[in-house]
Image 1 (tube, rainbow, N blue to C red):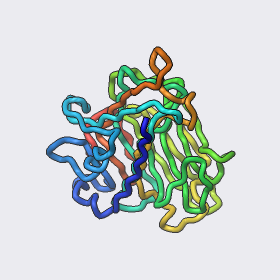
Image 2 (image 1 turned 135 degrees about the horizontal axis):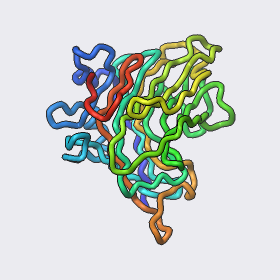
Image 3 (image 1 turned 135 degrees about the vertical axis):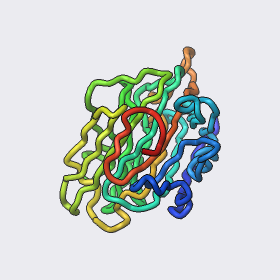
Image 4 (image 1 turned 45 degrees about the vertical axis):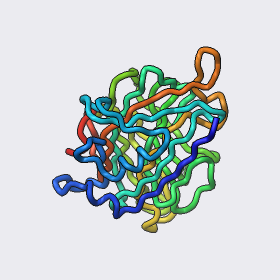
Length: 271
């Protein structure tokens, strides 16, 4: 099977046309509808494993279909970095997700998150201004934090689970990732919190995201980062014969706000 690797970086100036004046603090929004579809939709649907589908979004609108092709590293990588309108110290990423009936959580994998100008992931060495904050789907069909931070143990990201919760396939959930950077270079007052349908699921505190407070260390990118793994075949979805399988999930209504803005249920990007 051919490998699929695609990293797309889009400058901030392309995003201005989808920021609504009536939504102060809105740094990004995309609902994939034909009437309001913005640049982010075009970037995402250019990826070979992403497709905008009519009548499959929340309330029968357009939605984004992600195809997860099983492979020897888990599933083929869907990794896109998209620049926010501004750099900020605190932000909330909101999106709606529906795991389809064929979806297999296996040992877990990555969902979407936020990062600075040069995010760290993949076991790469930390830098003073580099970090990343992503949501993970887990083997127990729930969610966890996955943070590349200065005060992590080992070479991979720090992870924390929370309250008991299990996804039901075939329905949309509203996921909110609220995070705040540490205020000083050596402080651990940063945090990442995951909410599902407005309820706090994971509270990851005492975080040192960065060891430098230069502008490049601030929150500046949406990280669309979704795949199974891990980096070995044991993470891969498989069919009844043990062959690599292809599974799917739907996404809708992406938004990033400065500060705290928790979505209580699936629906529109704009408050």
